Each structure stands twice: as C-alpha cells, then as structure tokens.
Image (tube, rainbow, N blue to C red; front, side, top):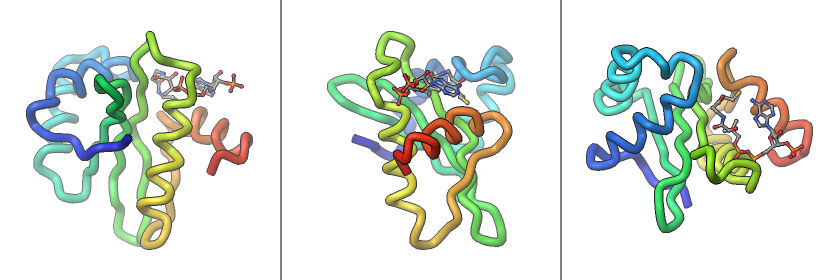
Length: 119
Ligand SMILES: CC(C)(COP(=O)(O)OP(=O)(O)OC[C@H]1O[C@@H](n2cnc3c(N)ncnc32)[C@H](O)[C@@H]1OP(=O)(O)O)[C@@H](O)C(=O)NCCC(=O)NCCS
C-alpha cells in the first residue's frame, strides 16, 4: 500500500530516490528530500509491504497539474508490478482534482504504464 512519507523513513526514501539518475548527487538528493519535507506542494509516498519497497513523488503546479517527478523501486523487487501499482494509486488519489502527468525523468515508465492500459 502507498503511505505518506514521514521523517522516520528519510534514509530509506533517500536510498530509493538515489536509483534515479540525479540521485547520484548526494547534495541534490538531500535538497530533494528536504523539499518533500517542507514544501506543501511536493508530495512523497512510499510503497510499503512488510518493508518499504518503492517511492513515488509528485509536485502540484499552478493550473492543476500533479506531476510525477520521482519513481523508484528497490532493485530486488522490480518487475513485480510495484511501479505500475504506485502510478495507478496516485491516479486514483489525484485524478479528481488534478491532471496527473509525468516529467522528463519519469515519462518513459509513465508511458509504459499508459501503453499497458494500467492507468
Ligand atoms: C522504473 C521502475 C520504477 C519500474 O518499477 P517496477 O516495479 O519494476 O515496474 P513494474 O513491475 O510495474 O513494471 C515493469 C515493466 O516496466 C518496464 N520498465 C522498467 N523500467 C522502465 C523504464 N525506465 N521505462 C519504460 N519501461 C520500463 C519493464 O521492462 C517491465 O516491462 P514488461 O511489463 O513489459 O515486462 C524501476 O525500474 C526503477 O526503480 N528504476 C530506477 C529508477 C528510475 O529510473 N526511475 C525513472 C523511470 S522513467
């Protein structure tokens, strides 16, 4: 299930976001997590089963867009549908109020979800 990010999951969230391309830069990663903690328009969720296995983050923009800007799954748990489930749940949560979309960093996988009619 998707749960809202909390400070006590900071390390695991940083670990997950580090699998994205810009995550190799530790300073940038810390700034990103800080933004999720402090900016009310940035929303980060974690996929939790027994352990936290994935992260998905979005930014609300003026004009009613909810932009998925981070998505990452623990490498040991990939190709099991977690990525698609996270995208799908975000759609269910946000689509009534916002236009959900991706950015240049998440678009490739987002398109894949759309192609498979997952969303
Ligand atoms: C992208 C990511 C979140 C997918 O998570 P996942 O839980 O493995 O995804 P799912 O199991 O729901 O879906 C797997 C499908 O997505 C495809 N896929 C994986 N990464 C993809 C990508 N970057 N672009 C397009 N398709 C991708 C797989 O090939 C697989 O295809 P299939 O169903 O035809 O076999 C995961 O691979 C990841 O964390 N990657 C590193 C972080 C990253 O690069 N994020 C940005 C992605 S644009």
